Image (cartoon, rainbow, N blue to C red):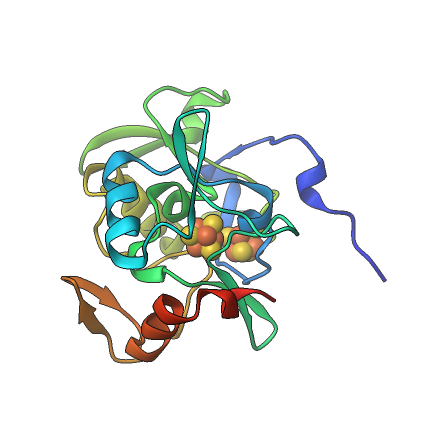
Length: 200
Ligand code: SF4
Ligand code: SF4
């Protein structure tokens, strides 16, 4: 049985007060649907750590390259889940999805979207096209994920606990490479050396 692709529908973000929880299921669809732009510092970081192969320039702007099937070149499949090959330094756009912390209530329902963070009030919506988004009464875990997303706006390279396409469980020891934490030295080395192995 095949399910309709939620990304064939336009985005209708819902205010966080209407969302019970969010946890990435590893379906990998966000990494197929979107092409990720790189900020100047992300561009330099990817270039320094991996080289130029994961980057493509379109209209003068750097993006993560896509595979022929539309998936991000850095995505790979493991145990039935689609995971991120650069979990330790993924771009901010990847870190934030499917949470949209905004300075203005762009998608309406101002009161339901208002979130009081340590950086002030943000208007927060989630994109329900992500199958990990469950509607209902917000849980403390959702509030923690939103607070983390807002923190990342101020510190984009900060560590992320509530994240998309988790590489490995948090209990797996981290290693440091070029001053950045990676969950697995072996996988990181393999990605550097054998980028073609990221192909499905
Ligand atoms: S964040 Fe959502 S859309 Fe993206 S891989 Fe996880 S469950 Fe799928
Ligand atoms: S989360 Fe990782 S695999 Fe997915 S688009 Fe971002 S960098 Fe690519």
